Structures are given as structure tokens and as C-alpha cells.
Length: 184
Image 1: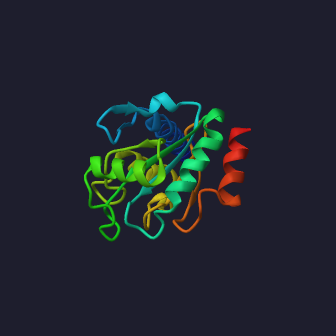
Image 2: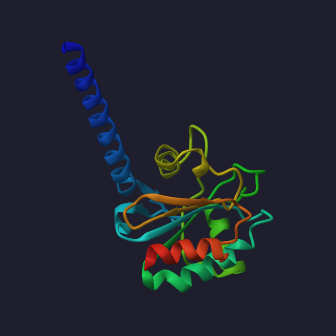
């Protein structure tokens, strides 16, 4: 009988610890701050209750044309509380070598980008930005970008619902249907 009680206590402790870990992961998204491409510090708490599409971007990549579709997606759904966040990174093929000012000018000049762009950051490895560390802990390895223009879709509750590889266009049916499902 004593062994059964000890076993039940251990099980309850494990369940309790797991529930604390899950709840703290959910809260951590809204505790994260990001630096905009112009240097402004933005708390993700500002986007609580909104849908977020987080994309690591690069100016000299074969997928760079997706900037236009990210802008179109944001324009189409921003009134329904979609937030698009582009996070420049130079970790894949050195395809984002410019300064924040150069990246901003490139995006505005070539794609008329006005969705949120962050300062240039690492998106994988030990120096990854906190949001990417959170994503990996919360969702697993599929949230870690393998190349530029990897997409992470976060619902209104602050949970990752899906990730999309670089070759998946932001305006593809696959992405749009997932976003619409969350927004409606």
C-alpha cells in the first residue's frame, strides 16, 4: 500500500511540474520583447489576442520575392488582427549582410513593406532570439528555420499552430486557410 501511495505522489508531482512548464511556456511569448528595425523595443504583449505570422527573412535569397506576398497577406488580414513579423537573419548563406538601415531601405524600395520588421537577429543556435528559443521549446524542432522565409503561425492564445517551410508561399492556400481558420 505504501508503494502505491508513493507512486501516486510521484505521478502527481510529475503532472504538476508538467502543467507549470506548459503554462509558463504560453505566458513567455507575451513576455518577450523584440527590437524593431528602427530600434524601437516592442513587447509582444501588445499582440495578445492577435494572430502572428513570424518569418525569418533575407534580402538576397531566392525566396526574397515572398516579401511581396507577405505584404499582400498582411494588407488583406490586418483588419482582422493578423500581425506579420519579419525578422532578418544572416544565418543562411550570408544572404542578409546589410545593416538594419540597408535592410529597411531595400524592403521599402523593392516591396513597399510596412509590416513589422525587426532588427537583424540569429534565429537558430545558442544566440537565437528569444522568440525562436520559445518556439523551439513550445513546438519542437519544426519551428527552427532551416533556411530563409521559414514561417511560424501563432494563434490568438499565443500558441504555435503550424510551421511552413521556406518554399511554402505566404499566399498559398495551405497558409491562407490556416490563418482564416484562426481569424474566424
